Image 1 (tube, rainbow, N blue to C red):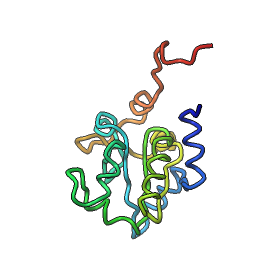
Image 2: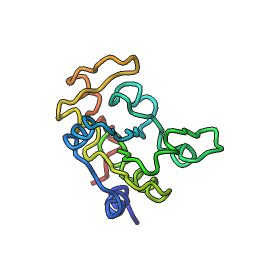
Image 3: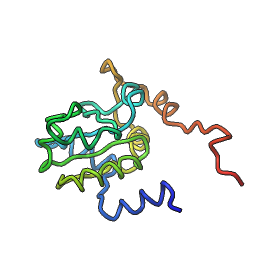
Image 4: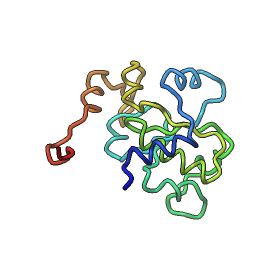
Length: 154
């Protein structure tokens, strides 16, 4: 039986990763990558990287194609553009980046360590209103909150 980490590790054979400091450098270039945040709505609205495009992983495939209710033309037309996929910790983004690669996106990267690492590197996050989020508040938001029943039996 495979586990979530097995799927992520297998996907890494076909997915390139960028560290937060690499992405920070790319964002200072003239041609900026498309930032694609694949987290859920409540996560994205709480905090995200400025100018990131929000596409939950559950509708990613249809958002990448014309003629669907979920179609996002900016994403459809980004197949030859650098695309950096973002999630909380860098796992969902690896799986989403693999999907984009399979759909013909040529230059796809996953943000290694996700927004947790972005925040640890003290890079800015904004909320739904465009206000910068306090680093300590982001730390608390990203902290794992596993309940006892979610832990692996010993």
